[in-house]
Image (cartoon, rainbow, N blue to C red; front, top):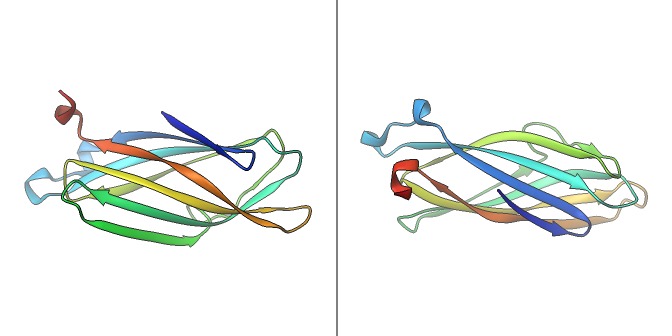
Length: 128
């Protein structure tokens, strides 16, 4: 697991290879990732937008962005934690992601950026 704190918000990431949804013969590797977002601020925050950078080990790069995460724009109260699971497909056995969330201080409507730490996605047999 990797974690990073930005502007009083901790983002933690765990990744899992999904062999049942992968097809290595066709260069399709599916990974799931679990994100935990903890609000350590004295005010509630809302996650408005996500922006991802995704890299395959063949040097291809793509960006994904949109409103919220998994179809919602969660509000996280002080001291609370929000968790979700999503996925990413790669064309190679290894890859990497990082990104950012645009959050909003609910009290004063001020937007701010929260960094999502870089994390690796590696097919387990490649780690030996």
